[in-house]
Every structure is written in structure tokens, then in C-alpha cells.
Amino acid sequence: VIRHSAMYVLLLGFAFGAEYSLLRLGRDLQAAPVVRGEWRLRAGEADRPCFSTTTMSIAQSGADVEIMLAGAPKLTGTIAGTQLHATASGRGDVAAGCAPVAVLSELSDRSMRGSLQLLRGAPIPFTATRTTADGQ
Amino acid sequence: MNEVALLLAQIVIVIVSGRLMAALFRTFGQPPVIGQIAAGICLGPTVFGRLAPDAFAATFAPHSMPTLLALSQLGLIFFMFLVGLEFTPEVMRDRRESVVVISHAGIIVPFVLGTALALYLYPRVSDRSVTFTSFALFVGISMSITAFPVLARILAERGLTQTRLGNIVIACAAVDDVTAWCILAVVVVIARATAVAPLIVNLALLIVYAVLMITVVRRLLRRLSAYATEHASSETILAAVVILVFASATVTEMLGIHALFGAFVAGAILPRNDKVIEALGAHIRGLTCVVFLPLFFAVTGLRTNIALVNTAELWLICGLILLVAIAGKIGGAMCSAVAVGMSWRDAAVIGVLMNTRGLMEIVVLNVGLEIGVISRGLFTMIVLMAIVTTAMTTPLIDRLMRRERESIVTSLEEVPV
Picture: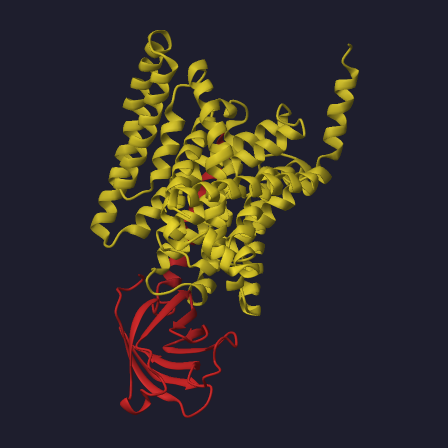
């Protein structure tokens, strides 16, 4: 019994010591910012004839994102630091040439600023603000 | 199709596919739970959603999900009640000290390794809505789970339940189950807490709840059971048990723990050796295993999307999770078993059996996804780990226990007819 008790105390000591150290070690780690949810897009007036979508929906799993824009193929990508980069994962309905095939964006608290690359033509600069709460 | 018809069709599809896959996996010597989990994944976005997206969208329409989810939760509550009911402290009557040391080493080692792994995982597969502490503790507990029901079934199918080694493994798994659920309850409270003060209050309430259930409610139930066995009908007793399960689940949910913990405690404190309660357990088990659990597997499959593990780095992470889970569980249980004086072969058997994750891991993962501690990508990776660790148990155990089974057969042959 004494031998088992000593082993058990050692085991618990190891567990608490190791957990405390590991949790302290990880407390300054940064995960990807939360971008999942609905976003309202604002593009320049001059780009309206080609690009009319005003909402963007983002699904997120860790640093990986899926961006859904109305009438465009799904864009998939990742967040690295405060940069979000996504590209079209399938051909989809991009025949019109106006469908976005890539998004490059700089993230801040509840907004993002970036550009949409269309199949043809110059990239369209945009700003977007989140319309749903974090994590919804 | 109206909503009721859609729900009924979903139930039929889920039960039929689950039974077929379970039968298929049985032919490969695998426990039915592997087939049921595989059936769930096949019905989800990974297979059905990819092969026939329109049919998938019509069969599992988003508006029908809340009902399916509610039914699966109901099934899980009953399942956890049964897990609690199957916990018998008497299994620890032999070598109690060894059992506690082996079992807790089998939790502590993978838990610590899981927390260390979280240092690598957090920046890659989590987001800022989750704190590192909650994430790391959850990864730790998800590495530490042992599936008591699957393990007991593997031993029973091989006729090893009544052997000395079988008894020790059963006892270790039972202690593992109770300890892991207690740790999970604390982790959920920590993950849900928004500040330190409510966290301390909730942890204190958790302790008060557990003490009240184990002392006052348990004693009350013992008296009620003796009275009800003589005076009440079995329907009245069933109603009383169901009320107890749901009341306990409601209390733990309100305390910020999780409804499943309340159901588990309700099962664990019910009086043992009572024929009426054992018969009721059998009734609840039948309905739960045949109807409700397949729905839970389907919901898990709908949440699992292997397409989310789409880069070499994510597959590497998946491999790391598997490595840590196996090394932690087998290594922890095996080394501690040798330390308490068992042979290396027996220690290896204990380690391999304790490595079975099965259904319990899936339950824990769904809790993590519901409270938002893990992302869907990480959920998928740990589901894959649960499948691999469960599937590897049977062939490994057959290899390790060949000699022991032969000796059992020989001793049975020696018994005079």
C-alpha cells in the first residue's frame, strides 16, 4: 500500500506540475482571428456593373475558411496572422467573368479591407464589416 | 415531404445503414460501434454529400437538423445513464490500489501529452473565440478517454471477462470512465466560464451537486427502491427512473456542466442488485442502442467532414494526434502496470485495451463541438483517431492473448462432462 501510495503521489505531482507549466507556456499563443459569420461588402461605385454582391458568408475551422458569395463559386483559403487569402475551389459558374476567383484581405477587429480578383479584369478593392456577432 | 415524414425517413435510413455497416464490420472481426460510426460518416458530407449533393441536401435538410439533434441528445442522455448504471464499484474488490494507479496513469500521461500537443495545435486549428487553457484541457481529456462498453464487449466476446487479467482491465476501465467524466465536467465548466468568479461558483456548485447526489439522493433512492419493489408497478418505477435521469441532467446543464454528466451520475447512484431496476435498464438499453444511438452516430457523421483535412499539414496533425493518443494511453497504462508488478505481456494487454476510444470519445468530441472549444476540422481529425484506436484493438488483443485463450480452452476441455 505504501509503495502504491508513493507512486500515486508522484503521478499526481507530475500531472499538476506538467499541466501548470504547459498552460503557462501556451498562454501567449495566438490563434487565428474569428471571421466566421455574415459580412456586408462595400466595393467602389465604378465596379458595380460587374460586381453586385453585397453580402459575404464565411465558414471557419481554425485557420481554414470557406467564403460564399452569391452567384460565385465557393472560395477556400487560410488565415495567416491578419491576412486572409482564399481562391476558388472549383470552376463553378464563372463564365460571366465577373465571378470572384480570389480574395486577399487584411483583417482587423470587426472589419476587413482587401481586394477581389475576378476571372477577368483588374482586382476590385472592397471593405467589409461583420453583421453577426463573433462565433455565430 | 413534410417534416414528420422527413424525420421518419431519416430514422429509417440511419437505422438501416447503421445495422448494415455494423454487420459488415463484424465480418472483419471489428466491434459493431466501428460500423455504426462509419455509417454515420458515409451519410454525412464526406461521402453522401459528395456523391449526391442534391439527394443529401434533400434528405438531411438544414431545417430538419434541430429535431434530429434533439432526438440524438435524448439518446445520449439515456446512454450516459446506462454507462453510469453499469459502473459497479465491486469490480475493484481485488488489487484496488493497482487498479487506481494503472487507471489514473492511463489518464494522466495522455492528458499531459495532449496538453503539450495543444501548444502546436492551437495556432493552427483553433481560433480566438477559444482560450488556450480551455482548448488545451479539452485536447488533453480527448486523449484520455477509454470506451468501457466497447472494451467490456471485446473481453466478453473472447471469453476473457472472468479471467484475472479481464477483471483488472474491466476495473481499470470503470475507474477510467468515472475519472474522465469528472475531469470533463470540470473542463466544461472552465470552458464555459466567462470570468474567474463564476468559474469558482460553478466548480463549488459541481462539488455540492456531486456530494448531494452520492449521499442524500442515493440513500433516498435505496429506501424508495425497497418500497417500490414491493408496492409499485414497473411502469411507475420506470417513470421515477426517467424523471430522476432528466431532473439530474437538467440540474447539471443549469450548473454549466453538461446534461450528460447528470445522466451519468443518476445511473451511477441507482441501487444495485435490484431486479426491477436491472430489468428497466435492459428495456432502456434496447431502445437506446437500436434507435437513439444510431441517430447520434448520424449527427456525428453529419458534423464530420474529412474534406476539411485537405492539406499535407492537416494530415500531419492528424497523424500526430493519433501518435500522441496511442503512445500516451498504451504507454501510460503499460508502464504503470509494470511498475505495480505485472508482467510486460499483461501490461501490454491492459495498455492496448485501455486504448479503445470508441463511442465515449465520440460523445466527448460532440460535447467539445457544442460548447465551441474545438473546430470542425479538429473534430474530424479526432473522430478519425477514435476509429483507428478502436479498430486496432481487436487484432492487437487477439495477437497478444492467443496463449491466454488457448489456456482457457485447455482448462475448459479438462473439466469433466
